[in-house]
Length: 79
Image 1 (cartoon, rainbow, N blue to C red):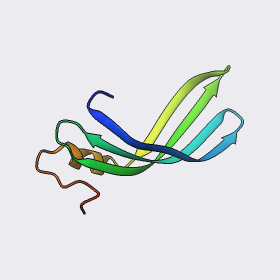
Image 2: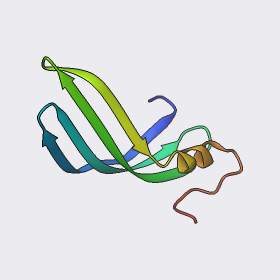
Image 3: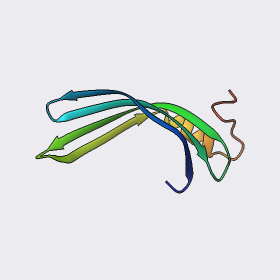
């Protein structure tokens, strides 16, 4: 993503059940426009159909991301 600088992106756990793959991980990003850094745990859910990605869902701390995009925000590392 052009507006973010990846500082860390770490998948930590993988789960597989038939046509569903679940990945649990962590990321640390810097918002280029503000310089603020956010960290968040995330979960990716991939559902496959006939060998192709049919559905993708991502769950993460959207409030931490929104704060990092605010010009007056304090990064999640400073809290």
